Each structure stands twice: as structure tokens, then as C-alpha cells.
Amino acid sequence: MPSDQSVNALLDTLSRRAEREREVSVDDVVSDIGDRGVGPLLFVPALLVISPLGAIPVVPSLFAVALFLIAVQSLVGDRHIWLPKMVRDRAVDEDRLRKAITRLRPWADRLDRIFGPRLKALTRPPAQKAAVVLVAILCLSVPPLELVPFAALVPMLAIALLGLAITLNDGILMAVALTGAGAALIGSLWLLISG
Image (cartoon, rainbow, N blue to C red; front, top):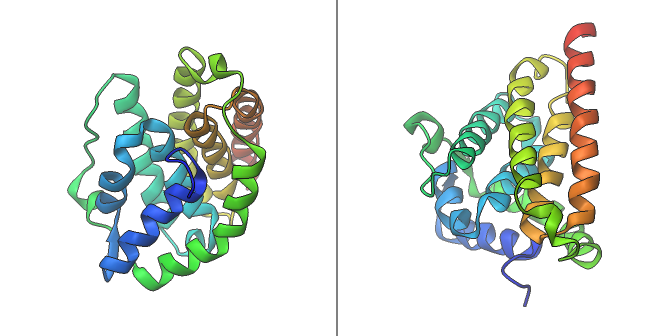
């Protein structure tokens, strides 16, 4: 059985929700994983966007809005995450969610084997605050990037890495993710300017 802080545990939580519901909303995801801290709230939505689910038009922007609100509220210290009703009520068919989870499961297994608690000082403030600020900035780049096919994956991958580093308390991954987020920010700006 995976620990509560593993990637597989997060996918298990989503899978259990998909078994109970015909559609899984953003609100369902936040309520199911929100008590585990800001890491999973950043990681799971970004992970879903870099899955085949992210190929659905407007899904990356929808998740970017949710991630932006989560990041900002985390920075000001809110414990209860508020999202607009329009975002909370957006839902994905359970079959699509199951397929995304199935495709993500081998990756989750690999991530859980490779990453884990180490150099925890790099996953606590101020590094965690810096990561959340980068998440908020990267989220702003997603809606215009949707005009370029699959370009929204660039910032979402960086957000997923930052969320994963916080979730798993992996300081080495945090250092890599902060570097990757900086590169993603530069790459996103380049895509926006040149695209």
C-alpha cells in the first residue's frame, strides 16, 4: 500500500472517486486531496493536463485558473481553498479520468521508486514559497499558449514537478523543478512571442 504522500496514493484517491461518480469535478478533486497540503493540489491538476486529458480544448486553461487561485491562496496562508463555482463545477467523465489514470500509473510507479523525502529543507519555506510564486506566474502563460498545439504542456510540466517535489518532500527534485520552472517560463515567453 503506498504512503499518503506517494503519487500512487493520489491516483488511488482519484480512482476511488471515479468509481463512485459518473463525472468527477474540480471540486471533487480539491476536496479529496486538499487535506494533504498545497503540493498535491498543484501536482494532480497539472498531471491531469499533461495526460491525454490535456488535449481537450480549454482543459489546460481551466486547470490553470484553478492552479493560479490555489497558488495565490496558499501564498496568503488560506487553509480552505476557494474556487469560483464555474471552475469548481467543471467535470470530466469518469471514463476519461480512468483512462488518464491508467496511462499515468506506470509513471507513478517510477516516480514513487525514484523520489522521496531528502534534503527536506529545500521543500520548506522560502523555497516552497518561491515554487508557488513560479506556479502562479506559469499559470498566467497557459491560456495564450493553448493557441499553439500542446504548448500548454511546457508550463504544466514545470508545475507538476514543483507540486511533486512539495508532495514528496524531495529537496533534490525541488532544485531541479525550480530550475525547470525557470526554463519553462523562458520557453513559454518565447512561444508566446514567436508563436
